[in-house]
Length: 243
Image 1 (cartoon, rainbow, N blue to C red):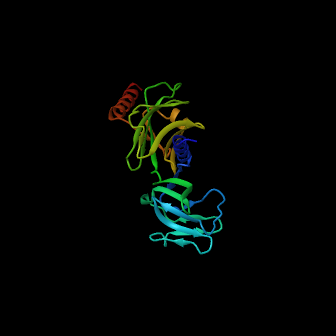
Image 2: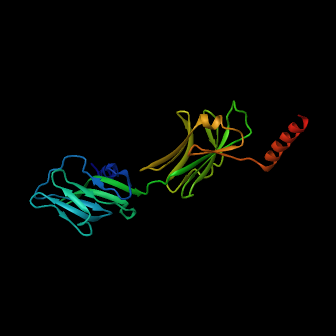
C-alpha cells in the first residue's frame, strides 16, 4: 500500500469516528455521561472524561477513580461502568464531552455535544371575534409568551390554523405554534427540553356571542359599545310610547 493510500485510509478512519450526538439538557438537572459500551482497562490504559479537552475524571485498572478540580464538588463517578454524573448543569456547561481511552495514543470511545437550555415560559392564548359566518367559524388567534419575547397571530377555523405574521418563526431556540387538536385551539411553546400549552375548546369559540373575546381561561369578555346601549334604550322608549 502506498503512502498516499495509507494517508487516505487514516483520514477516512478519523472522519468516521463518532463526532458525537447532540444532547439537550434543561438547566438545573443532572447530566449522565455513559460510555455506551464495554471497556476493559489494563495497566497500560486509562479512561478519561474530558470537557472541551479539560480533564474531569480518570479511571485506572489498579487505583480508585480520580475527579479533578473544578469538578470534585459537582461530579460523581461509577467505576462499574465508567459513567459520570455532572450535577446541576448550567449554560456554561454546554460543550463537548468525551470519554477517551488513553495509552500511547488516545481513542475517543464516545462524544456528546451538550447544549443546556432554559425551560420555555408559559403562554397566553386569545381568540378574537371576526365578521365571518358561524359555518366557517374563522377567528383571529393571538398567542404570546408571558415574557412577551414571542407573539404570533393566526387565523383558525374548525379544522386548521394559518399563521399571519410568518417572519417570526423561531426565537431563542424555541418555537411557538397554534393548531387544532381534539376539538381545541392549542397554543404550544416548546424547545428541545420543555413545552407549555394553553388551549380553548372550539365549541366555546364558534358559538360565543358576537362581539366577545375568548381568553385561555375560558371566560369570554363582552365588548358592548355606548351606541349599542343607547340604541337599546331608544327601542324601549318607543315601545312604551306606542303601548
